[in-house]
Amino acid sequence: MRAISCFVAGNKVATMSLAFLIIVVATAVFAPCLAPYDPDAQDFTAARQAPSFSHPFGTDFQGSDVLSKIIYGARATVAVAFGVSTATVALGFLLGILAGYKGGLSETVIMRVVDVTLAFPALLLNIILVAILGAGFESLFLALTLTGWAAVARITRGLVISLANAQYVTSAHALGATGTRILLRHIVPNCASTIVIVFAMRAGATVLAAAGLNYLGLGDPQDTNSWGTMVNLAQFDIVTAWWWSLAPATAIALTVLAMNLIADAARDYLDPRSGANLAEQR
Image 1: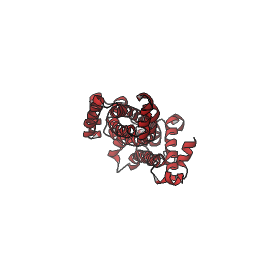
Image 2 (image 1 turned 90 degrees about the vertical axis):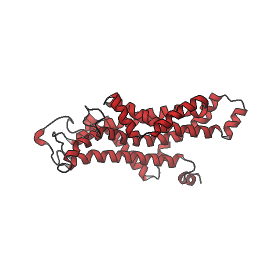
Image 3 (image 1 turned 135 degrees about the vertical axis):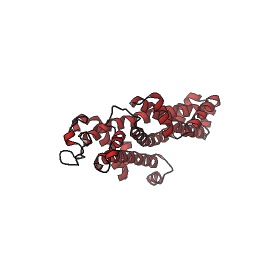
């Protein structure tokens, strides 16, 4: 808690971004209690109604309450953001350490796979993988993980190589420390701050990628409450029922913006070379 307090202290942007993300997570957890209507309930007599007191965000082409859909759609967003980011960072971190510290054939194989993965646009690879695996949340989760780990592995490898050549690691070798002890006591802890920053950055990119795939119809076909799917369905009524597309698009934009701002604040706080930390050290 003290670390979080120091992180947001004096940074109003980080404070507001963190508060917004907490609201999004709380909305996802307590969606059944917060949603004023059943998001899947249909009332064609109330289709495409403009925002009103009874429907603050209006209704869609089926008469479903858009606000209720936004609230339930936060569940998929939170699950993708934190689930995929955790899997991506964990896989990329482990393979990056293996490539940077172990070296040899392992490094060659891993880095060639990284090069091939990064050579293609992520969106194209995601589309190909989802097309092969079939539309659905599980396929979306797996595709985003398989296309996101490569950048994390490259960053981790470079960091591990630089740390392995540091003077304190050389001294530990001279004192007889084993390779495992050096890795766990000296290298991995010094990678922690960078991994936290990468995780925050991946979370925002993952939300945007998932929304893009859902917009293209490659997400869960049964989940019409996901924000990307809502934008896809609302595009045909963007002139006559603009509120229907505006609400999920705004939710996506604000969530991604908050995550990116948190990542920037984390970088400024955790990077010892940043001006903020230098001023604090003085």
